[in-house]
Image 1 (cartoon, rainbow, N blue to C red):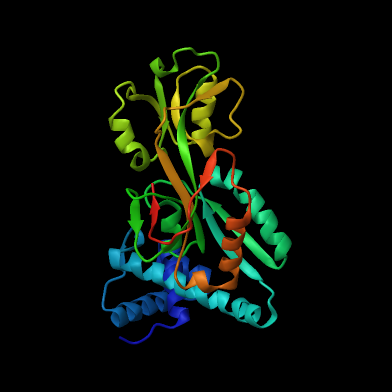
Image 2: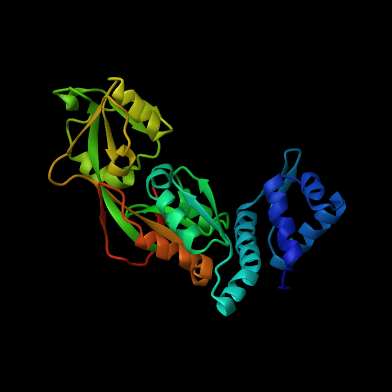
Length: 306
């Protein structure tokens, strides 16, 4: 197979992003025929069909999705190369570091991390994307080349994302959130949300005969908290999500052995060695942990999403 050049990788990424050759050509300042020719050349070099063409435009095949993920990661390394090499000479960490985080960790841990990071490295620019921690979640963003570091949920039963390095930060338990003044909260209707990953609570949940089926399921944990505070039901939620809960909501322990989840970071082996990612990881490990969480021993492994 002949090597693909950076310009070819950029064309693949742009076609996938724009979902069509014509839109990609406009974005790249090329002709549609030149983009189409370049994609066919890439397919010949790789030996696989990368895009389904049709009236819908161009959609990546399974092989194409994998190729584009590789392309993004390679282009990111090329982009980071200059600032990383200069950091080795000068000691100054500069450039960008892209972070994918789910909402609660972005709200309660990330502000302190970014404040410390930018104070120590004023030429380093963090770029943060909030990602719902469902499916492949933040780890999937890293695997697909859309982020350098993902602040992710790490659990033995979570879906593994091959090829990523993971580090643990803390563990948090789940608790029962219910309206204030409610004396029998376990008898209330259950309110749940999509990111309340069953992989963390499944074994514990199966042993509880008091938990009813959810009467309301929403996409956002803050909506759950608002509904519970209004007296509409109860919810089983991780501690981090309960920080800053609205007035009218109380929290009760679930017992001596509540379900827990581990939170950490994931990155790629190649980016883990860059100065920007190393600086971010050092900051993640140095800031005080959010209230209600317990530190866990540092360790590597596979990244997972709930």
